[in-house]
Image (cartoon, rainbow, N blue to C red; front, side, top):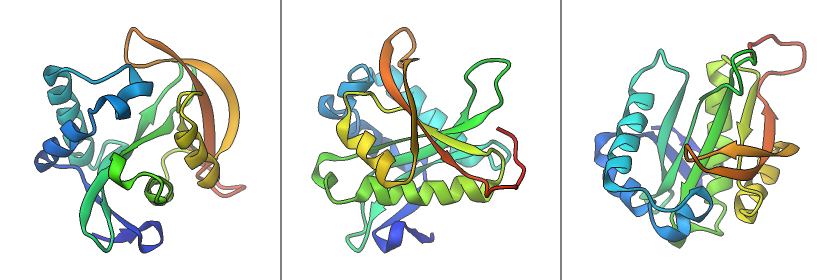
Length: 183
């Protein structure tokens, strides 16, 4: 695995061995802005989605466990995946992350986000990467600013399905000016 995030984190593809990490990230304080903790069935479905996203090289995006260096311990998860606002809109990448409480405030999320930006850019599929943190989630909005995203607007976002949340739509350019890519 390659080191990312200025040598402070390494991103490793999500695997079936990461279910324990997923369960740890389901803590109420980490799920506060996302509708609360998920049921065991929802976690199992999420685990499968994460595994499939990382296992299929033909599918846009990937999911990763964040490994903190030099400690070599899992600190959370981050990924990017195809997102479409509507049938007539071009696809873009969306990113999201969770950092375990013991590792928050140490720059882990920002380092991992910068690493994911490079991974998404290297895929060369879409021109933009979006993040949609809750307007109430100051730390995640700060990560977006630090990672170079541009705040486009506040908007309503349905997540989880059936629950509307107020979020910020942050966008980062993945293609250099003049280059062509979809989205």
